[in-house]
Length: 466
Image: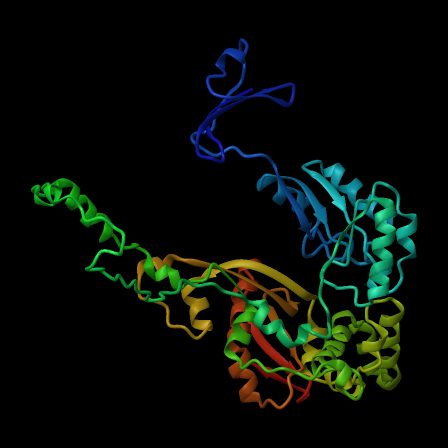
């Protein structure tokens, strides 16, 4: 096959000759290499590049196939020009063995659209401590990672490094200290770099006297008449310097935002006491994490049955212990769970809506393009009245706590652990977030509309309709 009328990464014309499935030549005027009846493909001026590699992918298999699976991930990779992808281990169960990694890679090979490598967790089931499984990994395992988790124990991480040095395994580290990150996560989460007009000025100083030791210019040269400026060149320069960017309004439109970043941008950033200074060893943020972690993994059917039988008093601790045993929640977090707030939740209107749904989707992440005007409004910025802004899109990313799927509609529920907030405070703080969630989720599940948006405050024990 001969590929013609292509350009390379530098923008220069290029042709490619492919023989027996491999690139045999790259250059120009390669038609002589093509034999009789050779297929000729006209690139039409498109850019030809080497295949791409993605070292951080989530294909959600096994356990979270409703978000993504191997077939859809493979098709997306191939469509984007990616021939190798590296999959993260935060599946269900967590990929902590070579057998599970081989299973995923085998399924990807059956699809056959790109090469796939499945990583293995640094610590077994993300427990933060156990690394014995690293000693028995075969040579086929090349990468280990905790994905979005940082190994908090330095000694454990050091031992993992030592094992991987001996076994030629690459460690992909999420370097985050959970004692520090609650202080600055709001500042680091949504860094936007909009265009900034600095109003800079340049001051020029004209020196009248010649510095000491510098000879004066030739007087004959000074007496020569100055050349006349070229009118055409002068006009071209004038027009060039007078040029203005036709879509200047778009300089204030971010290319990508996170939904939580929009909320945090509107709030005042506060610093908390670190956990080691707290009496119980946990910050308020970590207490909220315990509630969120429990609800993310909770067996709602079992809790509903316990509610019906009047045995919630024992069912909630049992569910907490189940999550610890399954290594879904760290013991030090689970032991601080406020069972009373969980009980109020199970007895609430929010839980009744969950039980009535045909399907409950938890921690549903999304990334989608939304109209720039709607995003700017949610950020508290008035969008410019221009055609460019009206047509612009912003990539919006977020994670919805709960999406309740009914036959003809969808409902959104979001847990909040904020303290010292009234209903009005919750609405003011999170109305924009839920509105953007609804736009994104409605787009993803079209034609089903989102007909209800609610915030459940674990502090107030109340469902607040947005």
